[in-house]
Image (cartoon, rainbow over all chains, first blue to last red; front, side):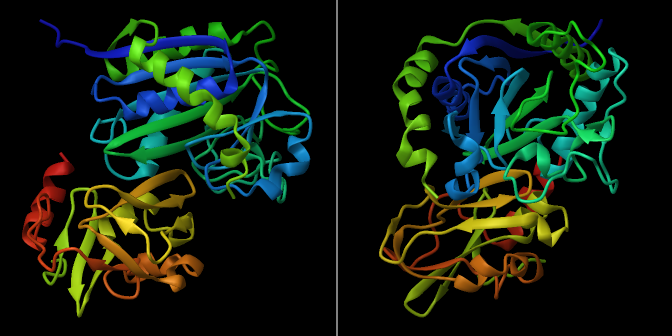
Length: 246
Length: 134
């Protein structure tokens, strides 16, 4: 007999409003349900998200003309255009997140690298290498790499950050399909897979997560209480009070 | 063995009575989880202004490492009397001396006892950490 596979929720919310996207992730982070969640989403309209502690003045020039939100997770700013965003929400005691933050990144990025290999992308952790995507003082996540970042073609290709609150973890990830004007020099997947879509990449990632972690991924929509929270909270994430809090 | 002159929380903060104040900090385990021994990975710590009330079990501040933002939770309730400005400017002190120089805030506690729910002595905290690794 094979062991029972761990059940996770699989959420896909395409072309959603930026503030609502962040509010739904907060609902998943605050959930009393210990069932882990893997969420895939895209943004409509495209938006710039600031890290929780970033200074508005650092990004003000790049934010001109953009829809802007601030994330609950840390790190640098990300331009959510022509990309796949994913969120993982689970108890901090879950095997994926247990222990040092560094170890959790290694686990998540190991799974992402497996999925990207299907397209001939040789992605691995940056380690001590220099990457061509690094830029000084832009405030952009993709322009400031760490040894834990996932790199291919000599450049950073996945932006990621975590929030740890109330014994739970929210892990944010952004995988670039194509380049945007605000994130020059980053690694993108279309170089290797010209026809790849966000939805197609999400399906591939879901398969790798299910296989790699021994999961039963149950596709479902956000629950009524999550939708109600997100609807009520969306405005907060795009409000000047929060966007310009620092 | 970690210091036994204070109590610990399951979210890896410590509290110690000192004169009229209670002092909060985070443990070496919390620091290690956030920065894996790379003291430069701690980038920002947001602490409350003096005069603000803090409530046991609720967030009183936040700390950011290169890859994660984490809450700081109050072990006991009271009113903030002082924050450690040195930590704000030199986060590496949390790696080097989380027990003394790396204290975060002082409060005027509502109660001068450390027998609140969820607070552990050093031995219980050691056991809690050992169990959480499995």
